Image (cartoon, rainbow, N blue to C red; front, side, top):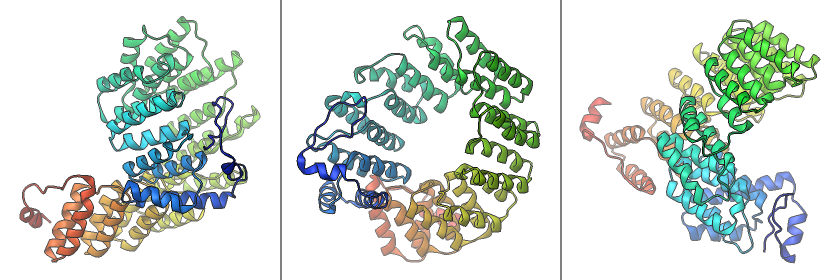
Length: 495
């Protein structure tokens, strides 16, 4: 039997003597990362369930909870094939005495939901309820509702929420809060407000309920009304409540109200935190006062609050908006002196400026610097780069970006590939386009219909029928062929 790592709140699990030595004598971080990579490659390249089982068994890698968590995380951020990940999840879950962690369950549900595999989501939840219902948490509810809300209507999202009543060991205010948070993030604050008023008699709103409802308003009037309702119910606001209201004021350029709210916090013995100051920094940038915002970084230290990466990013954003890149760069140096490392958001602020100023040289230099620092770009940065490469017809740079994405698993393959295939087809690089196309399919991602049609027509025009047939066979894993409305001849003429 395999031990599930224990926490204070977890149930007791047991392990056989043969596994104890492997469990308590850990491998080094480097070798563990290698094992994660080995298992990830097996999961993403297996052609069948039997092949997956055989490869995992022969790999010699011990499938601990920690390793499974990391592999599924890798699949999520590497945009791996959801059904292959599900086979891995089921294979590990079926081992005698093994229990997945809540993190593994939520990550698996996220991967399935992103690919609209809702039937599989409910299958997994039903199995988890039978084996270990304690794994289904309010976060689980929010993960599933988030994927549904992203693709379906508010009514369908609420219906899904109702469906959880038979699955979760709780169906209380925590679940209600998960629904409201989902609607705030994936729909609109107005939708969240309407659902709150419709269902609030079934649940007892608490501090977290109002903090969720205060979190995303652009209108200070709406936020103030919820703040007032919270007080009327006898719920005392905390630092999160005040931060939400201050953030609304700052985004609305109502800085006087924001400062008054900070003073009110202090009167109630609630100390402003780094999030409070980050909102103030952002608000000052919106009213064109980036230098005053930078002073806030210094002033907050006097109150025993030290800026983090997000606070510095807010100040850097202000200077980027003002096109004062020297000052923005100096803040990165200041971050480094404080032991803080720039993240993907930091770099994205500069990529945005370079893209709009059509600066290919500095964009490429920053990208290489970013990769050397081990910081992987986010999808926005990738899109700024690939569009700039296309504009300048830089095929080699575009292919290097794509190679890094495939190798390291960052960015959206679907969004980047559309621009990449346009560039390669425009430049007559059909061999390269075919290779990238097949790499994308191997990663479990379906190329867009537009990209497929264009490559298909060009292959037919150049008599690459064998290569085209290979592509069609590979595309069969997605379950349907891609029709070409209007006929191939008309598309050829258009191209």
